[in-house]
Length: 388
Ligand code: SAH
Image (cartoon, rainbow, N blue to C red; front, side):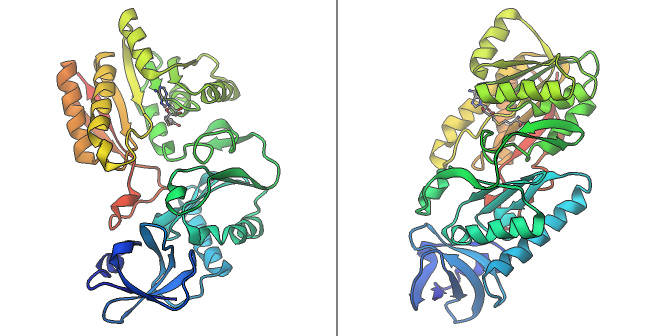
């Protein structure tokens, strides 16, 4: 199968972007198989490489290689080994990390998180889906997987014509203890959110250790399984509250606290907006607040509503902070840029009547690389602010 692009539409591919949209294709040649690997050519007949084709998706091609290698099990094995070796370098001690970050690891549409010998897989493209069993074999043969779970419940799959599905592909699922940056977590891949656990914030959670002392009063909002709160406790802080609306997350956060001997952390199952109302009544003030909400917008058209939501959250958090305190604030919406997020923080500070300074910028952890030539690979951004 051959795909010829329209005039000049090879430019993005040539700088390292990995998507070709359906309207950029001039014509196809040969038998079309959805999810199959196709050869790509420019309008001038120059060979560009190979990519997975899906005629039902707006992202019609996901680029795989500029060479002429076969797209087979060995191709996946090679790319996965390279991705894994990169992590071993960054985290020589860790047994849990994101092993494959889709486009950013040159395997578009494939995410694999590893927790000890347990692997969690998310597939977003028809091409990768057809290699699911091969990927499982590689995880067993090459990496010694004892458990492989697919967490394919993401809405994005429907855009590819793929069904949503979750379940065990190999082994027996049960919660297992994983250690990340000296903190113990009980992780149940099937029951936890997304791939089972948020590894992207690991790096930012550790940073909290530098900003708390024994006497700090810390509030971890949208705490999920307690990552930021546990790191604050690790640094010696004793007055910590974590809030999340998911009953399961709060239960697991409590379990994690006990695993580390941090039973003093208070975890509360509540909606953060309700929690704010309660906190304003009791007039409690904090020295550090973490604000790590879920994505407020998955599409461009909802940006105005999302901006309003972020301003409200940040303004309310700022009001609850003492003078000379810290706000760790994040946005994981791809559609909110860093510049927009800074404007949100300026508006929030104005409404709260506070002065803010940026102390540090946040990105995803190192096992979630970002491609500057492909802005779609960036989603998490955040700031450590000093609030006066
Ligand atoms: N800070 C976490 C990750 C947060 S993910 C960590 O370090 O792992 C976002 C979390 O927000 C999820 O756990 C989700 O259950 C929770 N959530 C979503 N809407 C909420 C709401 N309105 N109030 C409280 N929690 C909410």
